[in-house]
Length: 197
Image 1 (tube, rainbow, N blue to C red):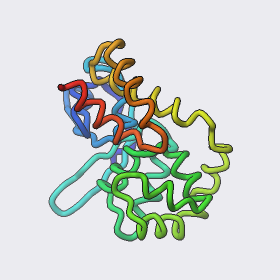
Image 2 (image 1 turned 135 degrees about the vertical axis):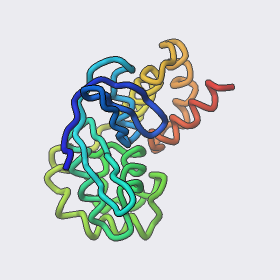
Image 3 (image 1 turned 90 degrees about the horizontal axis):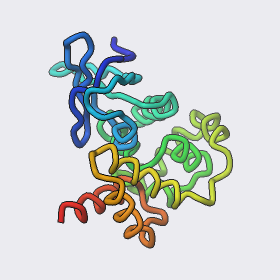
């Protein structure tokens, strides 16, 4: 089982990266948050990895942080949440924020994340509350600057996707009024639409 990859980023795509390790390219599925934190192609990087084995495929899911990996592993233990769904969820909410929402039973916050309906949110709270309590405590109280944080994450994601700082700043400022309570993946999609014309 592959648990970690260290090499150079060969390519970055919408939902994965190819990591070149000793001449072998590993396709690693990543959340938008982890993908945004990767350096540009050609630069060295290390990722934590979950290996998902099926009859017809061997898929690698990568994580920039230990917290994201822990939450991913907890999510895939929930009935009806597979690795792809877990990755999509983590594209819309930071791992510690998800842990806090689950620990607080905040179904409304969870349903704002794309891919989480009311029933799934309730199931996450029911099944994960005890598993994620330590991570939620580490996250501390919800920060007042959550909107500023998501806009900063948006800027970073756009810069990592190759947009110039003025472009990233401009679109982030344009989305400031509509950023409150929205997950990063929604804002990133809207930003990319605006930037592409």
